[in-house]
Image (cartoon, rainbow, N blue to C red; front, side, top):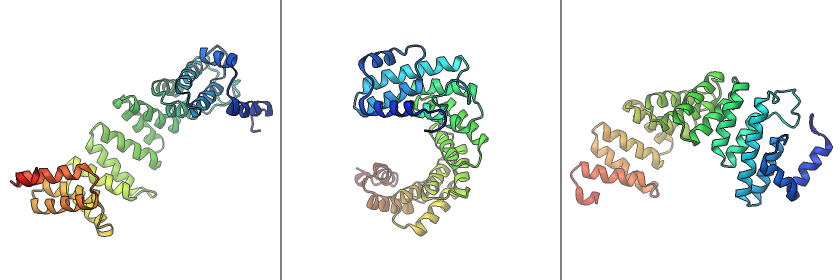
Length: 277
């Protein structure tokens, strides 16, 4: 057993995974009775979810969140403190999030950040759960803080760029997508494509065009990039080239409705309403 986990406790976890709690214990967990270990409750919620008992799982998870917040208020959830089961606060928030308890995950994350405000993993995770709650401004602020706390973390940079796109702050999205592109571990096709789209949305047509052309030099049949280059050429007033790229996009990515719509709009723009229809 690892530090802080007795053999008896681990055997209890095995029994929980196999059998769940008995009816009396389950009633106690559901009630969120004072003194229950919230991490233990959350494990039970995960087990019930795996068994398909979604309503019971949600009830237990909410009880675990309430008990967690109660313990946090009592200042008992510090590393090395007397709450010995676990102190993996980000893990607790992540489990709530994965169980679709997004409101409770946000509440716990906010409370935990008052205890550990400089934990970049916790802050970035809090941004994710606030984004899921449609708290867009809060999600963006937290994503920005996480990147400031750990500026070399590519995952955090990508998340911040994505949040900026969600709130349609395209100038910042383009900036952070470029940071991802230039990161030592970045530069993947997804980073290149995301940068091209954000540059287009930000109005930097030259950057969008250059990125698309660079990708197509290596991947001439990338439908998404043909579509993006078509949008770029249309914005530049180069209609024939736009039409060519939209046609290519619909040929190699025929399942993507975006490019069929763009092709129809381009035909309409060029006065060919019959073909557009």
